Length: 166
Image (cartoon, rainbow, N blue to C red):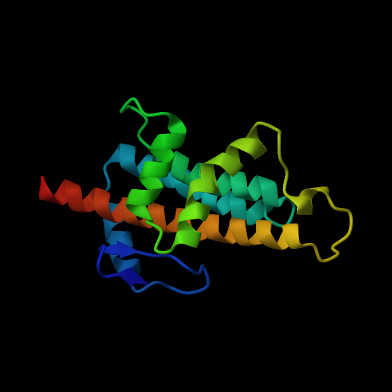
């Protein structure tokens, strides 16, 4: 899906071939060696998240957020979390207040999981009984996955557009 006003591409489902696939393949082919390696690292973390999701939603969430962290430039003197939030806002901007709130929590939740102060409920429960917190965390993981895929795609397309303009 394209956001015509912002010129951004949005990835909302992994179950279809996007209309912009040809552009992405051409953009990948045009990347320099450094950017190609960055993109492949980001793709690794997205793929890893899909592989571990059934084993650990917390691990999947961490991997999804890590996929974008690979691409974030922290050379500008910003904290890593501020640079991450700026990158996501630039490459996958929120379109609603609810999305904005969820965007702001991406890196914070990843940090809580990575530093040991949080696990998703599904990683702690023995049974699969319905649980509102579990539903919320599944929604958070789905949102993080869509946002991070969107950010990666837009990074790719902008990177090659900028290189072609030089």
